[in-house]
Length: 314
Ligand SMILES: C[S@@+](CC[C@H](N)C(=O)[O-])C[C@H]1O[C@@H](n2cnc3c(N)ncnc32)[C@H](O)[C@@H]1O
Ligand code: SF4
Ligand code: SF4
Image (cartoon, rainbow, N blue to C red; front, side):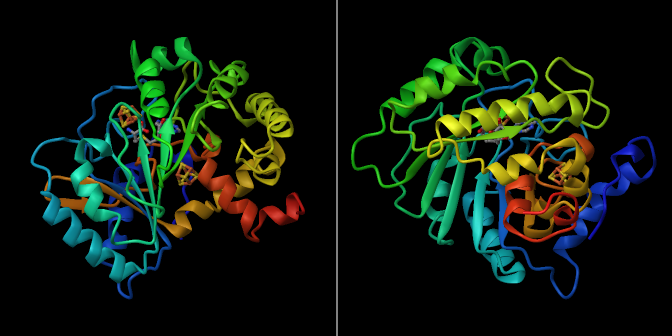
C-alpha cells in the first residue's frame, strides 16, 4: 500500500500521487476492493466552500462527461475486475443524474447515494441508503453551501413519504466553526424521516490554514468530545461508534491515518472526461492525511485489527 506522507506536500511526489492512484486500474493481478466511490458527474448545483472534489489537482472538469451507458458499462467492468461489493454514488451532485443511478443501483446489493438533498429523493428500494449532507443549523449550513440551501434540503427530507423503502440518513461535516452547534442540528432532525446521523470531521487540503480547519489533532480533540457527548445522549441516532471516536484522539489518530484502512478497502473513481481515473484517495489528490477526520477511515479502523490496537487497545 502506498503510504502518504503529507509532510511531502512540497515535494515532486505530490505531482505523481494521482498517477499512483490511477495505476490501481491497470495493475495485474487487479487489486481487490470491497467498496467503490463513484463520481458520476462533476456538475454541481452548489459550490460549497469546504468541498474536496473541486480542489485544484483533482479530476473535476464537467466537460465532455461519459454517457449513462458508458458509466454503467465501465462500473460493471470495474466491479468484476476489482471484486467490488458496495458503492457510494457521488459527484458533484449525483442526483442530477438520477436516471443513471436508477440503473446503477441494480448492479450492487448495497448502495449509498451521497447527495446535497436539493433534488427530491427517488425510492430506489431497500438496497439504497441516502446520505444527505447537512453541515449545521441553518446559518452555518448556508454559510458553507449558499443561502437557502438548508431550507431546500430540509424540505426534501420532510417530503419523504411514509413507506419510502430507501433508508434516509444525514452526514454532517464537522469543523471548527460548527462544532459547538451540533445539538441544534440533531434536534431539528429527530422528528423527521432521517434515521441517523454520522459526523465526519473535515479533511483539509495539504497545508490548509482556514477558520474551518483545526490546526492539528490536538486542537480537534474538543470536537471529538462534543460528538462523544452527543452519542451518549442519542446513542441510536448518532451512528459514530465510541471506538471510532476514541481512535481520533491525538495519541492514536496518526497511527490510523498512516495506515489508512479506508484506502485499503476503497477504489475511488473520479470522472475524467470519457474515463474514470483513480486519485490518491476518495478525498482526491490534495489532502492532509495527518489531519484527516474522515468518518470512513476511523469507522473502518474501529471494526478491524491494525497497528492502532497497540496504542489504543479495543
Ligand atoms: C463531495 S460531496 C458529493 C455529494 C453531494 N454533492 C453532497 O454534497 O453530499 C460528499 C460528501 O463529502 C463532504 N465533504 C466535502 N468536502 C469535505 C471535506 N473537505 N472534508 C470532509 N468531507 C467533505 C460533503 O459535505 C458531503 O457530505
Ligand atoms: S454539493 Fe457536494 S459536490 Fe457540490 S460543492 Fe457541495 S459538497 Fe461539493
Ligand atoms: S482517507 Fe484520509 S487518511 Fe486516508 S488517504 Fe485519504 S486523506 Fe489520507
